[in-house]
Length: 158
Image (cartoon, rainbow, N blue to C red; front, side, top):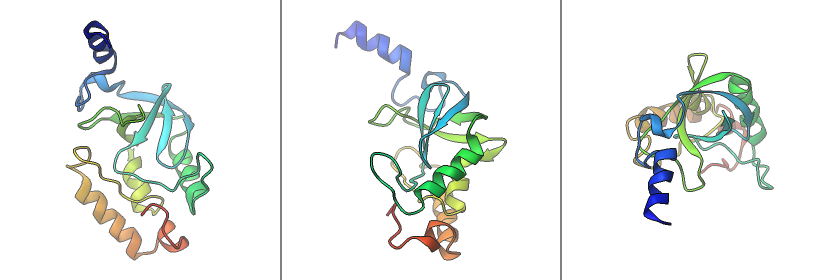
């Protein structure tokens, strides 16, 4: 790739470590589609939830509690305007935007963890500031056997 092309790409997409900078994408978007329990399409962009690993239902997978996680996610966000808050890295290796998602004042990422629809997935540097809080929410859900913690053996996101 030429230097001019690389500069144009960075200008259009934002630098990889953009944090909350506007280069990561819009701060608000309407959710067009729910792909699964931890991935949505909002404003035309695929968004992967930070610190969340829900059971898989795509690419031929049908993990225990995956359909439930996708339904819960859809109930929270589908067709709604959501806030997208970035962290240290704008995109993952698949080109999906990485963000915390808030819908109607509710922290969707944390709700998925605390209700037992997903496990914590911490890939530093993203999530460093919130990883302990999410781990505590997961531990509480696990001890109360909420969601996948009571329904799945083995738990699919471990």
